[in-house]
Picture: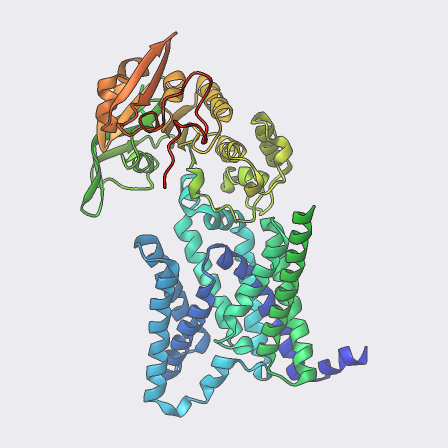
Length: 276
Length: 277
């Protein structure tokens, strides 16, 4: 019991653990829609795009959350609109929009070298530096994104399953996609400090694909993926504390391990079904 | 009676290539119509224009707005993502107008209505099955259930019998006929000319433009179908039924296989069998 409670004596751990649970759950929830849309790479791309926005916000001495948020939202909308209005596939659109945006950040860093170190944290995450203000922002984003998905649940489900047919049945798919882009951009910004640009994609994708292996029901997938994301956030924080390894990397490695376990379980079940 | 949908001199093209030219089509309340024509004739494009999923390059599309036409669409099965984690009942429930219930979960009455429609389509016991685990005919009925739960005035179906066995196809056309008798307007595309001739009172022969439209007895002639399909179509009329078939071309299997002989088909050991070296 002591081993479970000891880390909570430290403020950095308390803040970090709350943030990791919220971010894990949020990424798990949003990841379901991303995986089912076949846009798994968007998390990786968008986090890089937002990195560009963060640098621009820094250079212009603008609020990080507002600057990076707007940049990410516009990038997500550009990707959606490119896919909807042109014959370009999602992966190509993500590649073009997000790498160009990332390049803006890299160019600015090379021009203004004085803040290179500040962006190490954005690239690789720095959970030890999570303040109460950060926790409040992450909690706010998580609640808003969860509310958005709660009240747009049916429209999002139909749009994700078949956007064209959803339109015929009266779903305002363009609005649904715009709101979802906003939620995705907000989730990535909230996650940057915990996981870092380089690891967000995994936190978005792994819980959703792990749960997809275990259930054929959309409703269960949404609940289980958010739960798995939150649980792996908490367990990852504990592991990271005791083995003294970067918390973002530990969370993602733990999720990858759970995925491998689920894959082995399903492969074994399928093999025994085929033998019968 | 005012039409639900009216297309006047509609032209549509993807880029420079024209898919549809000079289309005039009226759909009146209670009408049951089928679009027939070869692959690439523009049937699905025309459905999407009717559904306002596409806008015309030229011409005018009128859709009644007061009250607004309630639409439902059953797409081709091949466009469905079969790996999507969703059960038959969940698909059916998608058809319920989301504006009537803001909560993520369905009301008891909505669930009962979905069950009743699935029962009516004889797939009530499959409600909790994943859609991938159903046969082609059952899958088609799941998407028909989603359309019916929306209580549409105009039901649009894209090739509802493709990939479906003969008995299931017959059942689907029977259900559609019943729905039409209850007042529902139906527009569908099909490659099954015989089924259209037997069940649909109005057919539109389409090949980028409308070649002919009218009752199948008038439109399903060898001349009009051959013009529509740009092939040699044979039409046989017997016992008030119409059968249309593409005439086998010069290298049909009957020209290649040896003719059957008395006592059965030749086997590989017989001197008449063709042996390749």
